Image (cartoon, rainbow, N blue to C red):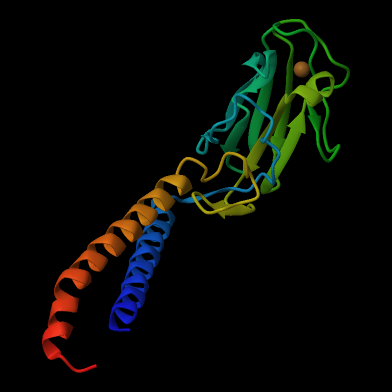
Length: 211
Ligand SMILES: [Cu+2]
């Protein structure tokens, strides 16, 4: 009777330890990140996207059209840039990866029909704050996409939080790690506590003699 009570309380303590470990890891992750532009999954199939290039403070910035990525020279470089309102973005064709163009997702702007010649340029000055997504028409299906973040007022998400931006990329390397630690702690403390109680708890009850 008594032993079963002890085992039950041992389980409760172990469960509490696991919960505490899980909470601690969540807090650590939250503190590590910062706000990132929320592209709403736009870059989920763009192989050369890893972060947003910060070009704030410049009047004019250049994005290359036809850099290596997405299985060929089917990428913008860099794919995501952050500029001040009023900045002119110049897209410059590298001549690699066949014909490309620049087309706004919202159809606000377009460089016209796809062309292949190196040195071709297309430019646009971004006055409106927010996120402007664009793509290359012939290579949209393979992930030739880009975005211009303008100003400081744009949709954002907390980095490291569970977000809809890249569900297949976010958190996967971290979560199993912490779950593993929590599980290990739970199992170890259960075993240690059980051994302790079986050894010392039982003898004290035997000595007590009441039943
Ligand atoms: Cu293209």
